[in-house]
Length: 298
Image (cartoon, rainbow, N blue to C red; front, side, top):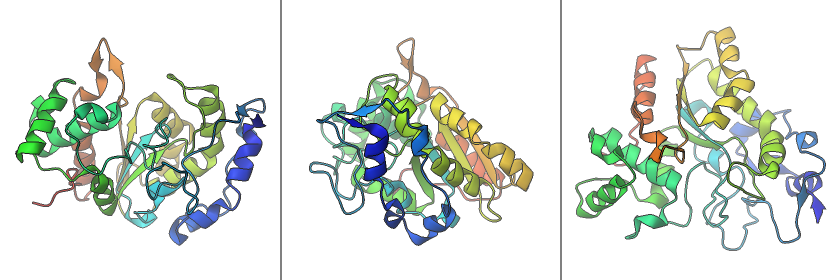
């Protein structure tokens, strides 16, 4: 048994070397807040911190997975949408370092149950945004309809091992509020809520504030679930953008339920408006271009 705080110190030694040069500039002078990790939290002998570090893969983890994977495919100046999740998937074989990406998938499988709930609902929402078919997000049972249409060719969507790369190329940043995890429980383990997430607050705050106050470009922050909304609020991002004169002209936000949230047996994520349509509406209103969420040209 080891102290989680000290384990994280050792795990993240030299962390800046894992970043592209442009993100190193954004995060210059900023450090993870190790002292914010509750002192009595522990890392058991059979536990580990993941995703791993760049170039130090965890056996069984997705290829290319690492702590800062979300920052690999998009430069700070190119970000147009920030999708803010909570923390990596609790299954290390899924977690890539990009929020909501399920790294064990190369293609859309025959069995829709293989897809994590969060990703399934995001895909349904992508399908509805691209086609205008609200039936794709009617309920969880509509996931089968999405799959049937994917297999028949009636619905075109980039395969899962390409979709997030394509969206990165359009300026999307799939960022978690906590970039690491070691122990999970539904509703949030102390190690998550009082360990990993507080550790990353300075990093996440700096990234969000930088993007909201840039002198060029437009960005919409998609805040899915109360944890993401709370982190955004506590970071003072809107206030910083208002002071810079960029709020509503270069930066906007769209709040929504978390993709995995269920209220009275129904997915809250499917409640209108469609968050991806809402994001594009905000980008266009600010003079930007919409994102092609399906990842397929034409």
